[in-house]
Length: 559
Image (cartoon, rainbow, N blue to C red; front, side, top):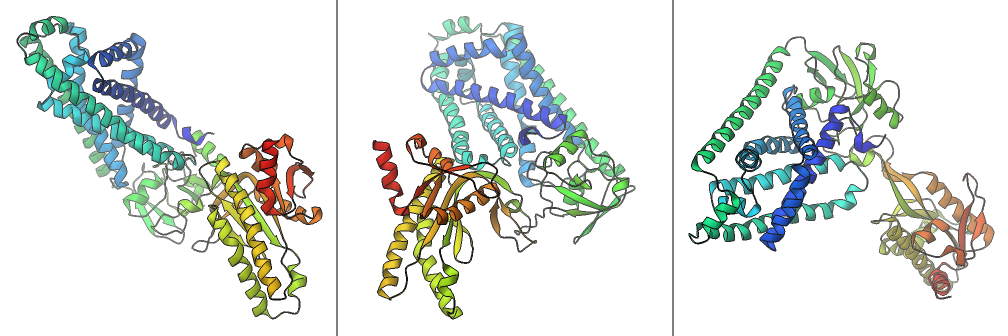
């Protein structure tokens, strides 16, 4: 199941309805921003926009999305058993609850006025009427609040996705520029149209064009907006009363949950295990905010599993996607009714015990395997001090080439190493890996010149460069788990390095790496390699001396 859409039907409806509203808000704000260019352009765009969202189908979709999104949010709020949630969630909730109080007046004085009193609510009318008034400031605040709420929703929906880390800087810039563009358009046209409406020579024509409302019509609209605001306030008060009532009733029959290697907590029947943890001040990781999508809140039930309610189909699907054992449950979905003993799979206590880095993520990246040739024979009979001294000199010579190319040494393997190149995309990762291989070969030549001057034998190496899917995460016992990489790509790169010995070359670069940088592999003399433990043959370019790689590729590109 795609992790973007994990969760029960309420979660999925909230996501879809939120995206519909976010798309509408984005188009609406861009429409306002066009006022920065000209009123005619802004109003022409408004006419096209209203053909869609004021049509019967458009109205059903837009207002249906608003009612569903808001209604489910209020329902979720009313069912809360604890007020202990992350601060970002309270900020998002507060912004969302503020929106209707400001939006109702805007909708009543535009859409309702248009439908009931045949008002021509063009952009010029709206911005001219409210410019430099209390209503104008409220609508500017509504713009910022709505946009901030929507951007937070998108961010916390996508933050568990691997690509989001790369996209986030662009999204932040986008999130700043859109409201700035809209407010600039509002400011420019607000001044111009307000002045036009105050001009006694211009106002009669504009009043006729807009079908200016009478004082009685304005009073009616004001009355209806006031009633709607009080109605929403009553609904919100009902939600607060429901929360308080549930908390009072739930004090009876508390359920006790014991954490392995952790505290014992209690909660009320109907609360999720995640809510119990938060209410008791126990840190419990939930990267998706407790919506059943990321599975990072999962626990292993060690005692009392037979008394727990069965998982929903959505929870079962989420657990199956991560190959969780039969006694695993999602804390954000599990509502214990009897005592139980559970183990948190991932901790979130401010340290790096089992936080985000330990969860594992997939990336397509290039890696480089390197091994020193004949190391055992070379060091036989030497003192341990001399062996360590040689290795450290060797790594001091070649590792700067890895770092300089933008890579990192994932691990040292005795007389070799594994380097990984985390870049913004596959092409950049592949280029960095090849640059590192070229640099290592050149650095090795310089290192061997120093050995020659010392009357010592030169060092020979083999390197394998490959690109593919890697699993990155902290692997090991809690508090002693280094960040590392695993996967078939690592095995293939290791086997490529080993194949350099059989071919008598210093470097093998896989076809995947060459294609990632846009190289025409059909023009290259690639070797077809059957590698042990690798299911399919791997095509790779053999390079006698690694530093010649750039020249070989340049010659093929020029041919």
